[in-house]
Length: 519
Ligand SMILES: CC(=O)SCCNC(=O)CCNC(=O)[C@H](O)C(C)(C)COP(=O)(O)OP(=O)(O)OC[C@H]1O[C@@H](n2cnc3c(N)ncnc32)[C@H](O)[C@@H]1OP(=O)(O)O
Ligand SMILES: CC(C)C(=O)C(=O)O
Image 1: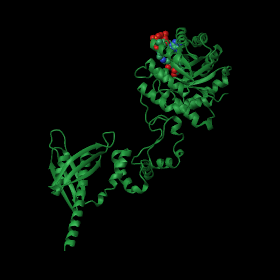
Image 2: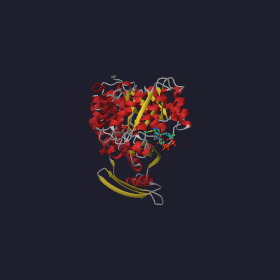
Image 3: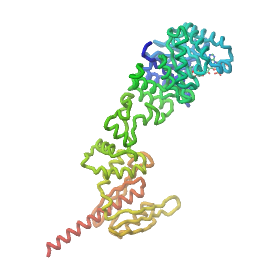
Image 4: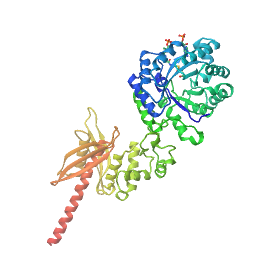
């Protein structure tokens, strides 16, 4: 038995069945070209009898794609098969895929036929499809719930009629891996002509087992897996192509199976399908989710920085992602902060890691994720040495809204004294500034410029306020940073005040020296 598993992609057929809006022929071709680049062996392009639009897209894809076999689906009916044959005949290599259901419930309640009639329909369909091509696939729909004796009978009859691939779908995602692997094993043990066809599987994800069931089948000898990009498909979807491909690649040592997939195309193909199909990928989705190569906790980040494979079983590059992400959160530690600051161009001797880390944790607790620009802002603020400042903000409360008079209460430490003041103003920043200036009694200080800048992307971004004030004919500049705009403004003003205080002290020292010299 070969160690090569064929990857049969049905994003454009089973995947498309579940889309909120159908794709245009041009969009389908874009996806088919991406699947061809990805190295998919067989692309199921659609169900040609279904609609004129689907017929034309299958035909367009059949014309344009050269390196993958193009396949169309049909019921076990001559008209469906003829539509497939006509749409696909323009292709270099094509396959007709015909199917009929085999479980009790489907044969009795849906098809309303006898078991013998259904076998006859399957045989006739395969024979009819063989008139168009030697590459015919037959599927036993709902095989997962089909009595094993009937399934064996159907598989044997389909192969005898000329099917070159026989597909065993778990149509409703009902089986467990051991059970599904057991079905494949029994087919290999009981169907006499089984070696004349490739055994394929097509698993749905209703119980979240589509990939596990496909893998169990491969372990029992299945050599084609039907799957879709991002696992899209009817209901809970199909087995996801990227997961199947990366399991076989990452665990090659265990499983010994190859595919033709060029895994570095995975990320790009996933994004294209997600965008064109308007189906976002959940962030924790294996392989292609936004967090699949992100590390957010300190112990993991430290490990990954020391040796990437401590927490990565495959590289981001192997699926076409440039590099991993180390998210800065309140669960991060000092190693990653130091590493990120070094990456940003700061030398370790230029910052006090403990002080930056302390400020980082406070911000991360408030904000969740801390970005590079936040970290750089914290680095800058670390240099201010707030605790030793003459003026310190102890408490701030600001009220604003529609149809209320904006007001602010500020409590400050001025030297050793604690002073509280409340004021109203044109807005909460104006009210807070008035309260501070009134605490200080600095009548000769005038705020001449106030600029507000967002240091992030979301509504929770850090606000950076830049204040310029004149005091005793000199200009002083201060910057304040906080998630609250009023607090950022107040911090900027206090920054200015501390600079005016330092300037006053320097002036006083100079005056004293002059007096001493004068004496
Ligand atoms: C498990 C799967 O994913 S199978 C693929 C599912 N995909 C689709 O259904 C998408 C494409 N389908 C379609 O466009 C339409 O359903 C069509 C064109 C195929 C058929 O449309 P309609 O003729 O209006 O029939 P409708 O869809 O309402 O019912 C299906 C009929 O096909 C029969 N049927 C279902 N599967 C098969 C089969 N494999 N072989 C033969 N007949 C079948 C049903 O018994 C039913 O027949 P009835 O009219 O005698 O009761
Ligand atoms: C047509 C078959 C392969 C199918 O889509 C299923 O059984 O889910």
